[in-house]
Image (cartoon, rainbow, N blue to C red; front, side, top):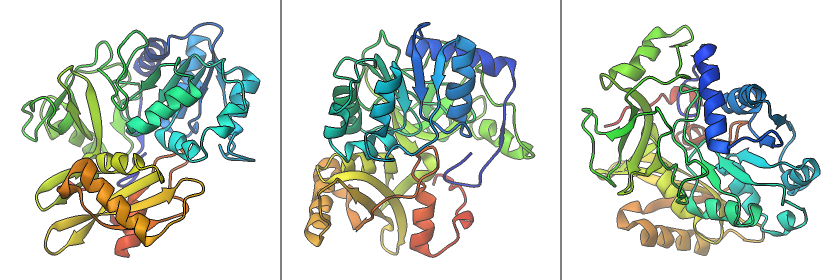
Length: 367
């Protein structure tokens, strides 16, 4: 696993892992005997292990697998499968949602999606615009969206809404029962509400990893950076209601003239623009500011790239996030490099930009 540094093989146990995924599948998705559960993850990814194969089978529910592309033979493929098989729960990635948003509402409206009763998101932070589109267009404004946070290392969903809770578009809500999560600074001290910090887990949980394959030093590092805590490597904030908002990986934070900007926040602001389908932001070296932000953007169907649009996007970012969020440049692309599970590979964009090999870009420590 790993989209930002060297891939790591995570070692899981059997018993604890089974307990974790079984309980979280039932808590988060309120599984019924009649459900048709479709998690679109590749079985080779941890979400595929946990919520395509093992958890649905442990729960005795029907799990649907599809190994084709969501746009083949056309952009209604997922909606066709949902209608054909009567899918009741659809669990997918923000990248997939944004990719399908690009084609508008025509394709979903061609299919009967009334079998759906619940939706889910996994893999990276989902921007509010994609959340609302998923909820309104696919879920008919009736299906709650369970935006889940967890990792290969955690094995199971850790922070997520449950069907009985209040939902906030873009928030992963609160830790599940038994999970003690906090947001702290580099010394381990809790940070004030609405201030970003490192996400940590303070108590063991059933599905937690047992080791890193052939790399015990890497395993210990997760627990030694802040004694007594598992350091997730993600940056997050907690609002006044105690809801968690993911801001991106700690190693995907751009330091512009001393201001720390999460790539997830920058990308979410970009995707809020009417012309943008998907966006990836990286930091590139700058002699004066240390780093500056460069955006890679794919456009919605029917929108043409132009210098005027690039300028408009830069102005849009300043309005959304303030002058510190200035983009140095905008590059339009037909698509963005991704893993099979749909995560954007920013390190490949950075390697391309800096003229280095992707493997040379190691996981960055926070300043």
